Length: 165
Image (cartoon, rainbow, N blue to C red; front, top):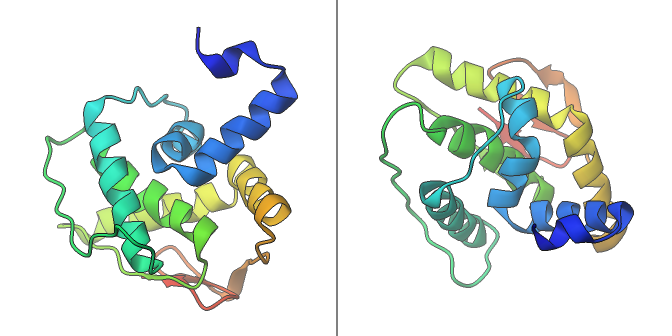
């Protein structure tokens, strides 16, 4: 039994939300079913490694210490790499800094569009809204919204200057 399973539900929800905001691994676990259409993430060592390194990229992007500028992820196909790097990471990053401009690419343009659309859909979901509210409530983060006239599958922007292409 995990520690969070032994505390009252409302406290556990706040703790899970805090972990999801702080750590990409926990965020991916919290949002995976919405991002993948119902499947559950079974996090293994490679998910931890990718999430830890992407958090270091976030530290670089946000000007924090301990960041890394470049990251190459090379693991076998069908392991969740695209969902973690091109769906979960960009949406989690906007929880911290909605001014970030994201350029996402894949070997096939349709995959880039698919991941961008999935990210946008995830950010319109209940879990993301709850985590965004958590950020606003406990960190006094300013709310942001997607800009309506820049909201298509392959490109969208928010009212804080961030965009994804």
